[in-house]
Amino acid sequence: MQHKCKVTVIDKKLYPDLQEKYIADPNAGACPFYNVGDEFIFERYGNADDFWRMGKGSQCSEAWDCISRYIYTALQGGSIMHGWTNDDRIMIACCNDGTRPVIFKIERIDYKAVHFDKDLSSYEKAQFITKIVALKNVLDINEHQDGFIEIIVDGDVDDELIRNAAETGGLVITKID
Image 1 (cartoon, rainbow, N blue to C red):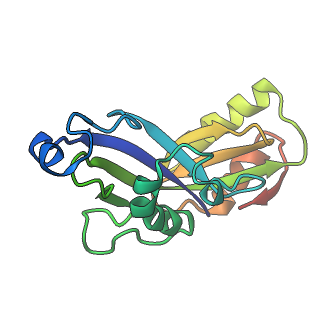
Image 2 (spheres, rainbow, N blue to C red):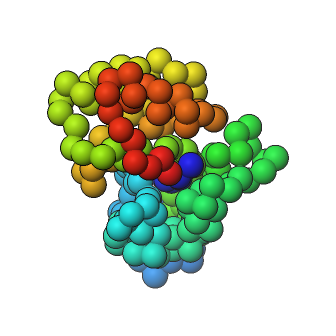
């Protein structure tokens, strides 16, 4: 099983009274770096290692200081905040700017990376995907540009079921991560 982390900006706050009292520019306003609805995906698979590149520069350093530990935990497949949230794969956190905090939803995304012995034709991919999406706990399928297919899961999906779906279409899986 592999893991990604999705970070979504779910809210921004502004405290003008605190900015007026404590900030050099009392009209600094809300955070200019993020917008509600912004999404960032962090990966650590194959050649991708977004964590060590601070999301390829997509993150403010103040926010990164607050959310990076949760992102790292998610990328390792751990419980982001065991017992605190309804789902151990999710955490709500904010940056530490006290006058204009940004609130983030941090989610661990679990997936299986399926590699084949050849590049699949459009027909072969479609046949395989049709069989896979019918399996219990499969949420989505992504065709990855590095030549593998990601099966996004919510819970366990037996590798044998994935192999059987491929074999019925005459496909050979070389590796499932």
